[in-house]
Amino acid sequence: MPATTSLRERIVDAAVRLTTDDGWAKVTMSRLADAVGVSRQTVHTEIGTKAGLAEAMILRELERFLGVVEVSFDAHPDDLVEAIRGAARGVLEHAHDNRLLHAVVSATHGADTELLPLLTTHAQSLLGVAKGVIVGRIAPYDVALDAARLDAAVDMVVRVVLSHVMQPSAPPSATADDLAWIAARVLR
Image 1 (cartoon, rainbow, N blue to C red):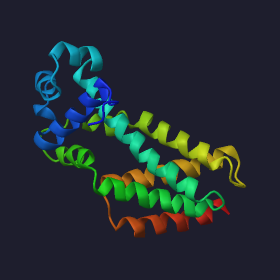
Image 2 (image 1 turned 30 degrees about the vertical axis):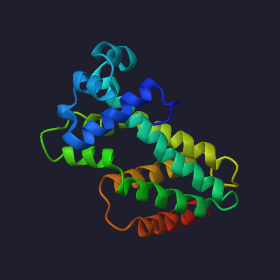
Image 3 (image 1 turned 90 degrees about the vertical axis):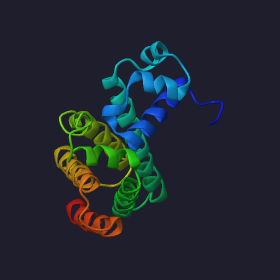
């Protein structure tokens, strides 16, 4: 672990490990403190509550997913449809191998559902952040849609990608191709 890793990052890393290994219900501030090598009070001071810890974990993963989106848009500065295709494929591939996401989704089928509200009832803020990034990245492209239609198109793409993150129905590349096909028709 690099020396530049903050205490907060170390705590969140440990929480992700504990969650993916043992389930969220077994994550306690005491176990977390032991895993990081600090006192329980230090964990509480740095993170706050267990709900705050869950939010920190989810927001960090969202940041990683949005980083994948940024890379695709940077790779396709002159082709919005290809940027969308690449972003969707990258997000879906990242989701496929994401242990925390799998722990949260698999928990929805058992009794350990404490993390689920962050992806459902609190999803509006996650959607808002994701849509904000996409709208910002679309701004440099020549899109002939008024603001309301562009917002609807972005909302549709983000929600469809998130739906496939939670419950894939095809390989990432096939889903990305389908989304790019839809986006090409909507953006014309």
